[in-house]
Length: 285
View 1 (cartoon, rainbow, N blue to C red):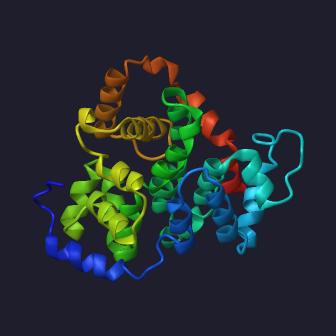
View 2: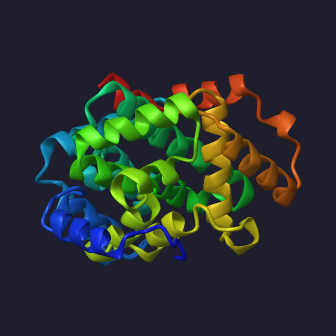
């Protein structure tokens, strides 16, 4: 990634600082690394999760909600996997463990600009990916949307006081947050997130979604474009700050995808996110 203002020395020091931290719980890394939809993966997924009763109870709560339930009560994790499918359950696990990922940012600015925004982006990405690619791929929307800004979490862990200053300046000036990060940390959240993913051996898909975030649209994957589109739409709907940079990204996505932006009203986006079972599970448990 060609960013001349990045300090390679600081990047290396920061990576050494976080390499032994469980920013992303080890069980979640193992769950994301499982290959899709085979008998061994089903068994391994169940084995990895069943020791965490809180996580299991959250998954069963989601599985038995009106959004997913088909009239028959689900009483075990195995039944939930069989009913809802391996990939959907995997993405539910990622969402159910989001409080572990974002626990280091327990203050208002971080919650609103990073945590709630990431949840909203993940949820709305599922709709866009289902509409443009297919329902079988929506887990990538949840995982990619939620983890795309993991670099912000990392910078906040490295120096919370300094990252409060980053968010304060961003919210007040609407400048490019990456430039503010470089000025204060010597590195931005994109490069930190990307290199941390490589360090922790997260799936290549997650690396790509982070790496592609600010690439020219013609160089992004379809997933990268749709998650960028989601990022802009949910910001416009009030989940995070919407700036001129996001307005430019939004127009590029609309032109590239050849769609009518009027089909994506603020009210419709807000309604979809707030009524989604995953959103209600996170914020109302």
